[in-house]
Image 1 (cartoon, one colour):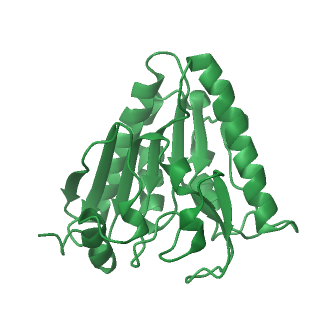
Image 2: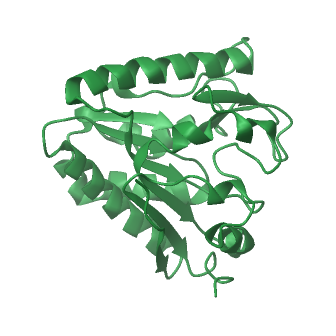
Amino acid sequence: MTVDPELLIHRDADDLAFSVAARMITAITDAQSTGGVAEVVLTGGRVAARIYRAVAESPARVEVDWQRVEFWWGDERFLPPGNPERNETQARDALLAHVDVDPARVHPMPADTGQSAEAAADAYATELAATISALNDEKRRAVPAFDVLMLGVGPDGHVASLFPGYPQLAVTDVSAVAVHDSPKPPPTRVSLTLPALDRSREVWFVVSGDDKADAVATALAEGDVPAARPKGRNRTLWLLDEAAASKLT
């Protein structure tokens, strides 16, 4: 089941980041309240880094059992390990290095170490399937699901690394794909597919800046952009600052 998107507008990027950080801590603790593991999909970008720093600096972070959080990524720039442009590097620097995570529960997308992006996507899809299957056995879930999936939105309406008009939007038989000739650098990426993005109980679109305003308005009007497609099974949240919401009617 999916429900209509909910819209929450914040004063500016800092207000947005602190609000989402508090929401993230609450969502994780709620997911852990029955003794299970929280499944969280991270995003990248300028506001994501602020969110992760706010989580790491929040006194409430002690309420989370970080050993029982499984971290995934929605997409990744296919660059060498440790490259500062990788979403993984950003998240590790801002959050994961500052909380007591279980390294075995952190699942970065493969970096470029000489293999192809296609091989990296296949490896990630295999890892995701194996982990989610094991968790389903433990929790008796009928459908693979993340607890929270965070997504940014590009000025062209892309989400993860699924760009308007690209063939990866039509892929339904695998969870992760390689993306070449990205319209923004770097040109090669790995991304979850739309069916994989739709496996989340809650989908959070976190968007800041007036350069995203047209894309936000188009997506919320169910226009023909990738950002209009992912929906949470229980909840879809659009978490915006005033600049990103400025074209909404």
